[in-house]
Length: 209
Image (cartoon, rainbow, N blue to C red; front, side, top):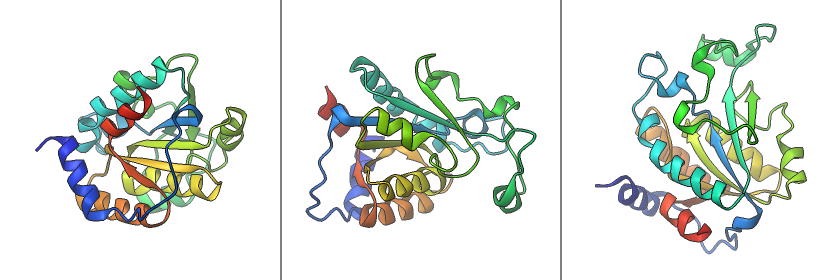
């Protein structure tokens, strides 16, 4: 079964979007590419998982169409400065990814262009102690399209925070991934019930082109 077909089947199982009035508005949307870093995508990293690389082609397609339409793309990377405390994240994972570590870089197939936004974050949410909300308001963004890793951690937390800031959130089920499929599925179920509309890559491409 293809990734697209699998995504549609999964959405049927978990989708709670019961007659929602939310409609995707491409011209006021921004594409989020969350934490597609070597840390998760490079097989030599201890944090690597196969699902992170399987979603690369779908994210590439979305990046391409957003660039063609001159729509905003927001890339994020989780990384701490050496002067910053790891805090609860460090205590929870017993692991720290620092800004000067090559594994903190966005992978080359998805690397942002010089004119595209790359936000360094220190927590799961891309909104936590960053200027992201102000940037989106300045760009007059109302819809957010979520891709990246990990579904149940940084992607879900960012989606929840976006919803709480009155953005309409669309979560691309075949352009997000977790290290365990059950965690991915559980996250989709929760998000579709209260925070985000589940969509596939092909659906978004059809809406924008």
